Length: 114
Image (cartoon, rainbow, N blue to C red; front, side, top):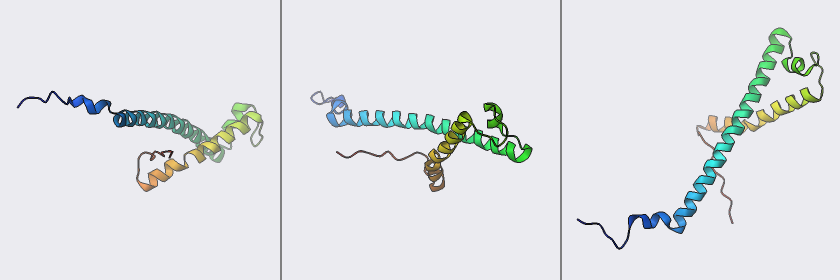
């Protein structure tokens, strides 16, 4: 009927294993949040690339070349950097595609063994 006073319920909350678990969960949360930002930026770059290819196909207009001061088909340092970033963004999104195909929503955390 009464509470046990010799072992408070909060004792387990501050045990070493629970503190370590909470720290790991916080680290995993921060890593997941960082990856969400990376994926959002990568997706934005891939969309820029897709729109550029759409304009090339429909109107023979290279948006990246126009923005960087080149003519269609020419490249300069800035346009090359944009093309490389778009390509790297596509590669960075491959694991996201794999998760989508496999039906999982989030990447599984990789735990370092010590």
